Length: 111
Length: 336
Image (tube, rainbow over all chains, first blue to last red; front, side, top):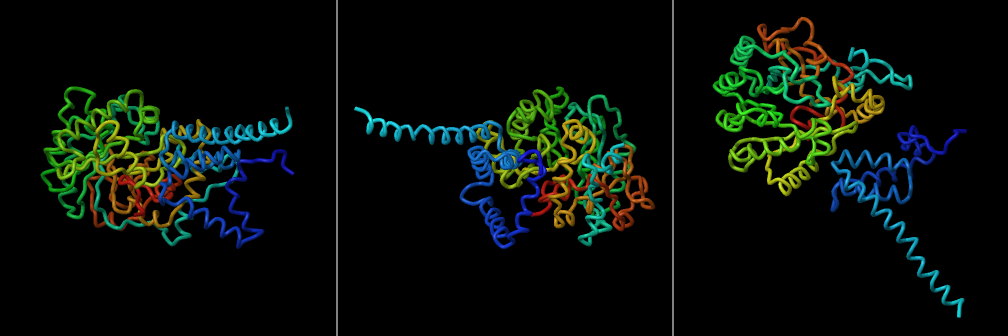
């Protein structure tokens, strides 16, 4: 067993997940490739969204992959950091908006 | 020395697959010429800039420049080779060669398309260069210039402090005489190459972003953007090694190998001439001192395009840079 849960060497092995379930794996990667093609959104915009989501789900593989991808697609550092702030704002907002639920409960239980 | 580095195993002990072997898998080995239509001439390593990624290792201290005698040999070779439709002048900063203007004038008389790879800042480097936009216009020169990013931070990180600002000013001067403007026929193309250890993105998408940013920020127009992959040669190779990115960058290039790009590499229709007249398959081979195949004419004075068109291209591990993704050449992507 490895000493850490995450290893950079595992990222390029992502495709190997098809070994245990080829059909689902292939369908996933085909869908994945389709999603990131230029469409109503540019490839660069999609890479920035992916970078923000990567931070929200705190996936180190995705942060590695989409930091490189954003640079490759021509995004600048300001755009990349703003994308991370969008993720942080949504994550922070998601925690804080539950404060309303807490306040409702306080009202329910107190005089 | 560079070739030794390129051929050694990775830090993890595994050997990168030999480029020739990779081509062989796709039936492309030996790689052969498809007929020379472009003569790329490096008129010297002298340059006013010292860019961190430069594969020529060019700079103000370099003294190797082409003599007028060698230029005359180039002119003679071009005259006897009607298939050469394009003459591509590069350096260093080609304009710093004292015989540059004479050479362009003589080339333009031959009726071939003349490209000058202008680093932009040379136009502002000294009063004697201020009229270069007019000179280029007068001779119908196709100008191709490097601008690695539409912001100062990444441009200056690669090309030196203040380069972005001067490049913008030079582009405005080129625009003023009609370069990059619709309907003038004066072609101004920009070259994008990544400022770091990553590959270039899609050319079409980056071109749209460059056009939008340069127009809105600086009122600059240009025709096309060429995306070029950095090859692990000279200063860029040093950068990769010193920054600890060499292995992962080589692996990225190999993983992105595209046989369609490999079939369309520029060395198949180009001959590169060194400052001293020796012949190479490309400018990168020139810097690695890999002359054209043994037994072929190897100097411009022996130029024979019929013989050279039968040559096998000299390959090494750096060639993976031209076959990654959508391909890379001095004219940008090779897979359309």
